[in-house]
Image (tube, rainbow, N blue to C red; front, side, top):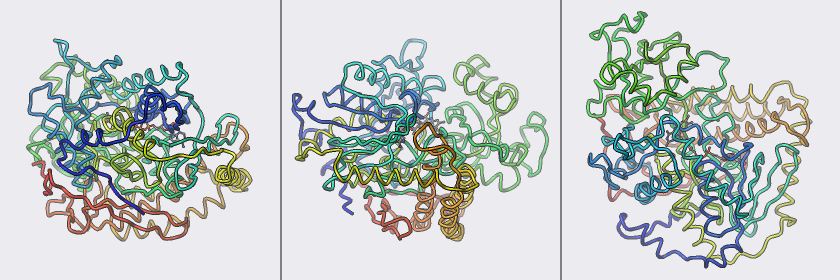
Length: 637
Ligand SMILES: Cc1cc2nc3c(=O)[nH]c(=O)nc-3n(C[C@H](O)[C@H](O)[C@H](O)COP(=O)(O)OP(=O)(O)OC[C@H]3O[C@@H](n4cnc5c(N)ncnc54)[C@H](O)[C@@H]3O)c2cc1C
């Protein structure tokens, strides 16, 4: 597997400018001759489809929702980072770059991260021009708040609905191109395969989720912007539809999968309340700007929070990390919450919770200001828990939230399959072993608005692409395989639902490949998953047929992919004999319980090559070098 990063040589600060100049261009009159497929209409996909169509390419955009506007990006709450330095508090492109490399525990590629920081300011300009209603200061300037892992305020936001507002902006740009006839939109259409012809990605095969029709689509290049795979854990903060299908099927065709075990556990989610749940709810990290995290100082203290005096509380983040306090990065805050709950000091019915308390902020600023900043989040919390956070502290606990792993891409965002580009959460590129808050929206929009419009031109301009026929054997083979799989599902005489298998897989992964991992646990999970997979294929029941709207069928297909993917996650976690960012192997920790990296053996991206479902995959490495942010033990003290 060729893992050439294609990072430009020379200083990191001017690399992207040099690269943009060096790359081939496609003449404006020739752009309309190219057909591009974009799978995904979230922030990454919608921004890419709109920008490429605006340039003149013919674009087809696919999503499984009934409208591109319902992509999971709509759920993003807290904000988007950008190095604008509006606060005059010391921010710069270099500082955002530095914070992101350090925040990712030195497991990201420096050049990609620098470019991300560099284009961050343009994203805000673009979105403001589109009319995205970012919060403003009294005088009219855009407002900022702080997010974890940074000591400056650089997060732009629209109350607790930043993703929704950004997506509306991208959606408007997309619909403009739909109206202009440059984008053809395929909602409620699920991509089930990538098609590779003569070694290049030349199309996809889809299923119309309403009629069940299987169809091929040929193109000059394919872009996947299909989001993250956090739902492999069954319980997560992701929308229920999020899945690994698109990237996993591309992986099976030759796209390397990078760092699949890097999963972000977010520290502030509403705690699990019982076995009935199928979804967890995030309480945005922005709340840690004003909320203080604490637990009772003594184990087993069952008093109501209001009855516990100040002197008998432990504000453990402020105590352990005085420099960053409640705004330590997510991995650090999550582990600290787990540790105090393991000591028996957790709150709530199952003892798996800590308080996030706004009493001080309400006293200092008034309830009105807090409502203005976080009103919709407080309301959401109250609706779910029946507790009013203006009166009692929120109870929060870590939950699966984001996946840093994804398909490997080079500096041009191209996977190991030529012509297959991967954007947004679906790729592995910028966050290393831990993503800083408010950086996913930044990355998705950077990829879609500012990177792919250049790099795809370079690919198209450098390659002679013969016309492909969607009646060709590669397409027909894939259509037949998909048909067979559907037949197998609906013809199965099983008794167990896909959901019950998914729940079992998720629990297994949470316990063994979740917030804390051990070699023994990972080995046990790896042994169990193939058995569970076999049980799944023998016992799953899928009612209805393939030629109609059939949500049970869609779900079963996604769970089947999770069953294969989950095993790779455990394998990846087992091979990485170190702790870094969110990947916490209990065997590798400092005396203070922090992640202990092994830079000698593991300062690399692990990239997996598929060799067959029941065959050993091959682990490749892309070495990482740090010339601008020097390798050091992370400290937030
Ligand atoms: C509750 C929550 C809050 C968050 N808040 C923030 C925040 O404040 N700031 C921040 O930076 N990040 C935040 N994030 C993370 C961020 O929202 C996501 O990482 C980001 O929106 C992902 O965007 P995307 O475009 O890559 O993918 P998505 O928005 O997930 O879009 C995926 C698209 O791919 C399509 N798709 C997927 N598979 C297929 C298939 N097989 N066939 C056809 N179409 C397919 C879907 O239909 C969809 O259109 C949050 C995440 C969650 C869960």
